[in-house]
Each structure stands twice: as C-alpha cells, then as structure tokens.
Length: 193
Image (cartoon, rainbow, N blue to C red):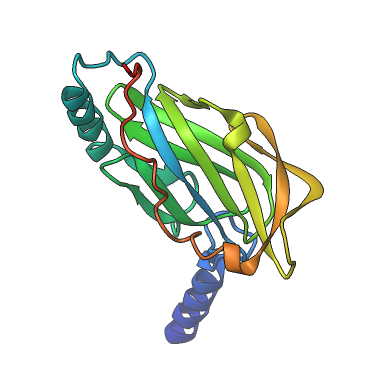
C-alpha cells in the first residue's frame, strides 16, 4: 500500500513539474534571433586618443554579459568589439538584459515580434536599467519568407520603444541570422583632411 501511495505521489509530482509549451520558460518552437552591437555606455568619458578609446571600449565589452529575462534556453554573448547575438529568444514579447560596467541591468524590450524573425539593433547605448539606440531608423525586424525581394508586411514590432516595420525577407538573405554582426570598428569623432 505504501508503494502505491509513493508511486502515485511520484506521478503527480512529475506531471505537476512538467512545463507546458506556453510556459515562458519553455523553448519556443519559433524562436527569434536578436543581433546588433553596443556603441557605448551612457555617460562614459571618451579617452584622449583613438588607441586608448579602443582599449576602453574593448575593456567594457569584454566585461559585458547578456541574457533574456524568463528564458532559460536563450544563449548568446558579447564579442570584444561590442557585437552581440542572442539565439532562441521567445517571440512576441521578450526583454534582453545587459550587465556592463557603468550600466547595471540595462534592458531592451521587444514587443509584438513574430516567431522566426531576426531582430537587428545597431548602436545600442547602455544605461542603468535601460538602453537607447543612436539611430532607430537602422533597427530591422526581418521575417524569413519565400519571396523574391523584401517587402513590408504592414505589421509592426516595438523594439526599445521604437515602432519598426516587419519586413518579409527572401530566405537567401537570412543566412547571417546566426552570425555576430560587424560593427565596422572604431570611428573617430573628427576626421582631419
């Protein structure tokens, strides 16, 4: 009798601990990828020379970590040039968090992003508890589709508070969705001719 009670309790426990597909902690069947690069930390003092500035930013980027709130399956990282990639991010609504020197718990909120999309966010400026984008017009939300050329779907996602059109994109243009983007390196503020 004790064995049956133990077995029944074990079965109930197993079913109670099982996660549903709708659970925020479950792996989505249509995850999104989030890519881009960090420009800097808000309020950081620029170095006096280009070499020192590159070293300063590299130090910040190597100490920066990234995560997705409420998702135990999302994975990714930040490269020493500031480029970041996060894979297996839950669609519809997610919050991407960064921990960087001078920017504790910086966050980017993604809303209304359909499954399988690639979200590209260049020039992110991290700040404590939040983040901004230097040029919001460069944010892209690409949806893979069997089409010949890119075209807007008429739907929008909200990325870091910015309304961004969702664009159907030919499959052959989506091969980079699992690669770190290239920020193009350090660009000096002033150029003398």
